Length: 58
Image (cartoon, rainbow, N blue to C red; front, side, top):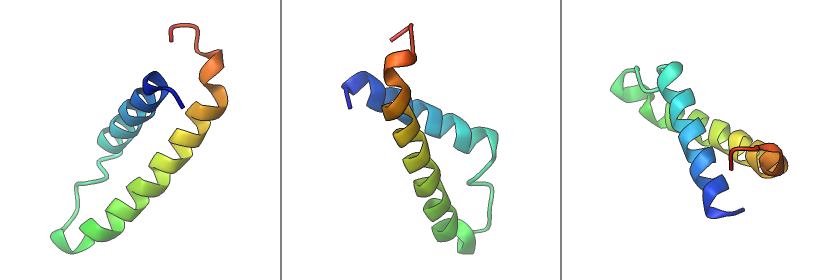
């Protein structure tokens, strides 16, 4: 992946986390939420990698 695609995957992951309030949880749930975020991040990373060439603005 290029630096641009990695940055896009990071930005999309952060936006997903924010929009879904994934860190709005009790302290005891942080570890499980981080695990969920890691899974989401991997899905987004893979999707960006597979479709990066389709983004006209990059």
